[in-house]
Picture 1: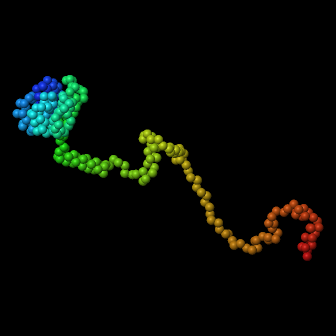
Picture 2: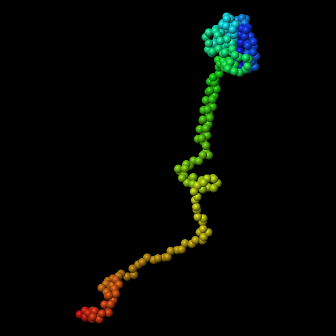
Picture 3: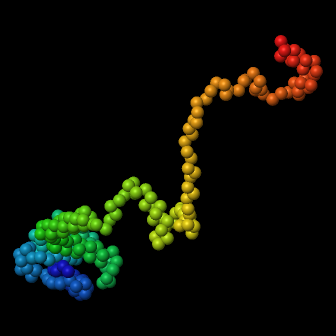
Length: 256
């Protein structure tokens, strides 16, 4: 917590003592100084590492030591409270907190305004430290090592499948057909082997001899095509065959 030095005149002693008690309850280390004797502490306070809280009471407006504290202390370290509406006009980094209506309670607008101002002074006195260069370098080396290790494991991982789906298009179908994989997919129906496959005998083919001509064909063996009918006789032709005149005509032609 921030060290606080309270500077006030004697007419604001009661208010200063109440603030000292409440701030100490908030884990602040508080030092209270009243009256003109505070001038002996001014030179050391200019280089000290604490917040300076000035109380502008009616008597403090006309006191030269109060103005000396307000002018010579770094404005970024000042926390100014006023119980009167006409506080002195000096160069300030933050407005004066109105404590005219404050009755010693821990809360309200006046109390929260003072606490916010103390936080701003604490941030100025104790700024957050930037990360060290060694820590940044260590983080960079750790990140690089992690990336390198991941790439090495990826390249040398032999558990990954080497055949892609394009090289073996039936891989997915085989995986889906395997009931142990728990995957759904089309079923492949395969007819089981017959029990008679081992008893099946192949019938030998007939021993056919090539056809060979026994003797050269003779012209006398060729039938006379004149008396060969190329088609079946019609009914009318069959009736004419019984005509006796036709039979005589045929016989006469034969005799001649």
